[in-house]
Length: 560
Image: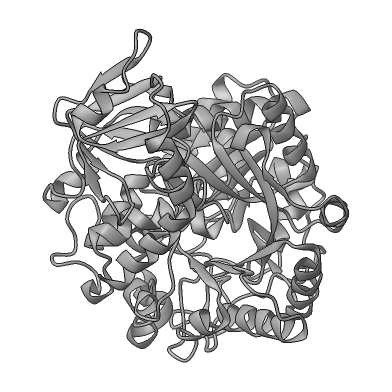
């Protein structure tokens, strides 16, 4: 058995007592049976079956059609797949739920190919927006424009003079503000860059409108806060959008105190409808309140987990905020930004170990990753803890010396494969050839016997998890570029890619006894697809459509 098969088999043992009792107990009618398909279970003991049965929101049988039909009763719903495929419900192991809900309401700037196109979309929104009201947008990326230099506010300010405008870069680590927004925020040439951030200024010392990392707040603080109900509506809209793409779970990478309250409110109302693993934002009062309260595990009928903290070590590669050991190849004046001091990471990690919470820290650059690993190592030396499952979120650029440290320290690299296919066009400009060898290095990490939970970082990337699945196995964009894949030696197998967004994601959230595979006894979260992503040619993966999404044996999305 392969190492990955052994890993899955070990996790499956957790569910065996449930499986045994479920399949040997006196027959009882199933609520749902699924037959006549190819069901990928992510369970090494029965990796592919033709049918399954569900009762009380859990899988009670996997095997052949005759076995499933034997559990049918008068009120059982039968799903005939007609030869189509099923996979376990997919989990995005790093995303931003409220950010997605907000983006669904904001000006969509994804796939803009010029600054002029960005401005045109904002002008269109301004036509139907009362003067003086803020306009927000997200998704621009100057690396996709003919001129990849930072934009300046001038053209935007001339085109939209009567509305404050704040446009967030695709990675969330920079914003562009127009003149009206800077006036509202009292941002002037006298304003100074905060620690861990930068106000981009022109040769005369005037703000250009671009603010990076911790400087974003200088303008964001002037934007009116949404009401509590508006945030709740954003969460509900985001959940519906996730279901449409086959997501049954999400790890929310940084939830505010208010957001956590709303998750619990939705849970009490029975409206969460997703397996939500919420990471507490780096806000001391909120962290301390949860440390006193203790972890929430599988609350509200297995829909909410709050047992982790989200920290930030550095910025993003696209905005040159990722902290590097050596200067950027395309801008030797900088080697990135440290959003938080290393001492803060160590302090929170120490206290989290005492309180029983996981720590998940954003680190993209090789220096950022090294500092996080150093901080974790110090905390674990001071407070040795078994099965802590600390995580590094992104782990994009790694020095070769640090790759084996993840396994040595028991740290999980939580990575987003779609970042590789978004960044590959320009990452070499930032890093140079040598550092690319440690960039998005999935195979190098997997070879050290770690697992990699996969995600999208939406709304940085698109919600569709099959984009990351395709990137994992092909390392190509939707047009099949580059031929053979970008550094193809770092590819995952399809089995690994499926595990990365099912069982490995569950493991990264301490949920493997309940979620991640279609094992009898576990919760019945699954997705019906119109094609078999485990067997179709790679060029056909991204054309796959989600026919239905099921959470706890209940359809939460069905294609019309």
